[in-house]
Image (cartoon, rainbow, N blue to C red; front, top):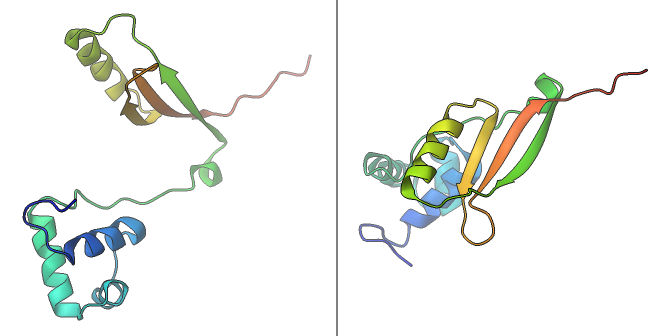
Amino acid sequence: MKKPGLDAMDPRILDAVQRHGQLSKTRLAELVNLSPIPCWARLDRLKAAGYVRGYHGDIALERVCNVTEVVVTVSLTHHRKSDFDRFEDHVRGIDEITDRVATGGGFDCVLTVVTPRWRRSSR
C-alpha cells in the first residue's frame, strides 16, 4: 500500500537503504535503476520528510566480548495504560535490553537481552 507523498520509486530507494545502510550515490542508483543525481535528491527528500530515521552499525558483539543473546517474553499482570507506561519507563533504562516489541495475544512484550555469558563453576 502506497503512503501519501511516495511514488513508485521511493519504496525501492527505502528498501535499498534498509537492506544495505549507507550507500554511495552510484551504488544506490544502481540498486534502484535510476541515475545517481535524481536518486540522491530523492533520498535527501525522503530523509527530510522523516522516512529515514538514521543509520546504525550492526556490531558482531560476540566478537567483542563473551555474551549471550536471549529473547524473553513478558506478560504483565494488569493491562492498564499506567502499567504499560511504567514497564516501558523501566525497560528503557536497562542497557542490556537491545530490542523490545509490544505484542498482542498471549504475551505483552518480547525483549531481546544481551548479557555476559556465564560459566559454571567447577566444584
